Image (cartoon, rainbow, N blue to C red):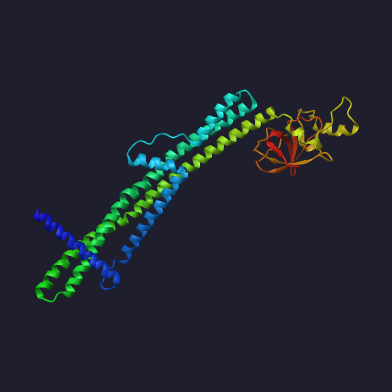
Length: 367
């Protein structure tokens, strides 16, 4: 019991001495042992590494899980050391709703068929998102979190010890200056040597830990590359899924709305072709008639009508199947027109000196 009381009193005395030394330093009444410039740079780099790692970690968590309630739930599961339950993504849930709606509307109806196609794509997008979140959590978030909860805590602990050792060292220096008697000076010098040794030893331990920040940066750099690759893979998958969906919807659009273009293009609707067409129509019919040699249309011979041309925006990329067709790129503007005798699902498209047939379902008519 006596030993514990003495130890408690000793610890209280040390704490009081450090508090006095710290206060006097702040007031400018006591000298402070300064660390060398290299050590200060290491401390500064460690501080901004910790601060930016925290910010990047928190914002990445927001990116991967925008729902704050879900983030709090995952945090509690993690602290309780329990497995986080698998959560259905928004895309998967939307796809499920679309599929169920299609079953009620009738899966064979045009709306039901489209709901099923879009719903399946949403499910695939949701699964890709879940895989991306899982990969990023393991390969990127976990290393950042391990640094903050492991290495940084160790560094912070050793820095606090170093601060205490420095306060003890400066307090010993102050006592040595105030000592008058020879015996008191000898005792103060002994305390100063001990304090200096402990301070130097702790400074070396802390310095080694701070220099380890370089290894942390290398590790985080590797993790950052993995995160970027996972994100690129995820977005590439999403893009491909949407391209496939656009092709499906584009191919079915003509079946569902076969007269869409004709209904919106009064100016270019050709008159019914009789068994004996007018003389003025014959050159146009000859222009779109097959070549005698191969039975295909020669786009170079097609002449636009005097009126009835329109501007159109391309909705999707389209690869020409042969030389009679015009390849398209999404979002470009082309000139289109129809000729008597043409298939209503096709138009003649022009882009500069290039000319060829283009599918109506890939276009949005503008004028």
